[in-house]
Image (cartoon, rainbow, N blue to C red; front, side, top):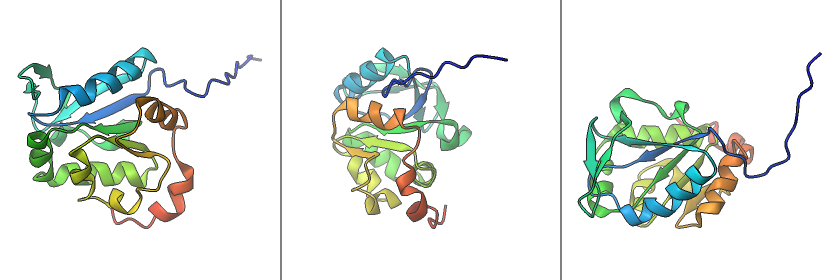
Length: 166
């Protein structure tokens, strides 16, 4: 027989993977605080962009892309974060795969966070009908995102989201 240790740690998100959905021109200021919070909890942050290689943030710094949107799916991640930056958001709004990616995460009851202009992208998805959802966080403190990820899913969303056509 094996002894299983159960931890009662409400913000344990170690090894969870969050998709940072962004394009060139994303707001470095937006991602800095939330990335630092998640990585401080030993979570994994992956940059999902329109293409592989690197993307440049709004301050001109290059950032390594972990996956191109065409080669990944939201089911591989525990949560999604979308930073602001008008240039980035405009590019994402022009790609139908991002809308699908976000809608599927919504349907699978995952935590979704966005800052500033990224709300415009969410308004092109079914998330716009779920803004009162406790795991949809727009311009919220990064600890609230940690708390939502730690719940693994927002099962309260399940019945309503199950009818989404994605």
